[in-house]
Image (cartoon, rainbow, N blue to C red; front, top):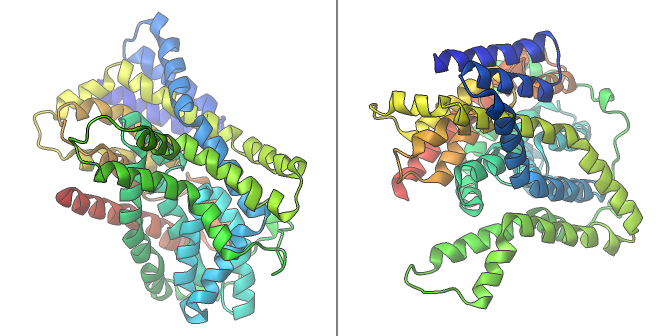
Length: 449
């Protein structure tokens, strides 16, 4: 019965968002309340469960998201993201544009949400395509692979950050393992898969695409852009801070005793929230004040960035409410009991649940957060499970099979002038392969750590 209630809740969510076109956040709250009541939760506990799920989720990640989106906006508005992309393209050369684009997208994607990175990079690769006299499609799949790996595997993105907190995983370890898993994954699903797509749908690589819907897009001259070194450091600073502290923790002997003041200070600076705050302040100088911009101009950019993610934050909070209802109503525990007699690898379980929810719901972030509600009770039976790898497995599963219920599917279709079939054979194929490759590399990692 609990499984049927969850399935029914997902079906209702699909009807509300796709058929009735109700706001996703409102739909998530309605379904969360409905699932709680149908599961037999006491009525006086229903709203408390929803509120604690929403507040607990946003309380963990609100600061990181806020600082992260402002950092990304400052980098974009100063031309730093364009500098990174153009420098990578110059380094790799015209014959290896796909390699240049996938690495550029991965670096830029660390500081930007997927949709923001897509809107930022698409005009750049269209401009490059015009200069090289080729179709923008030659760079489409590699760009998307770099962005999606950063989105699915690396904090401070919504999915990895939220589920790391929900599972109690170390964000720094998630970041380190995510980079290790992500690089071979985007190489396979970017430049290598791109060769397959050229044979699979050759006519697509003659299309010119159309980005008129983006309106006027700002392009920076050589003198207007900051240098590559400072742009790269600004984009990667939160990653560097978190990674360094995680490496310090891993290298510190278990019998080292109480940490000293210096070590504690480094731990403080490497905390994901503090790392993002430091990186934002650094970006205010390197991408703004140091380049002659006023604080008023910079804060205007930051304000617009925050306004742009208000809807996303509410949807994430709604996903957190749904997750908490699954836990508090006992659905997660029921599934844990159901599979307790089976020898199921929790990494496979997390990936499978996230993949199923992603295919049904369309939103990778909502799928990832909801998965935590079903998997957390299962982890008590597997105390030795590496929580960072469970986080990555959930993120990998949530990337699978982006299709017609995902807004990104239609954005990519329109920008590159594709048919629905062609979008399925490029973007959907890539997202599915990326999810599977990610799972394989996560399982391989679990064998050696």
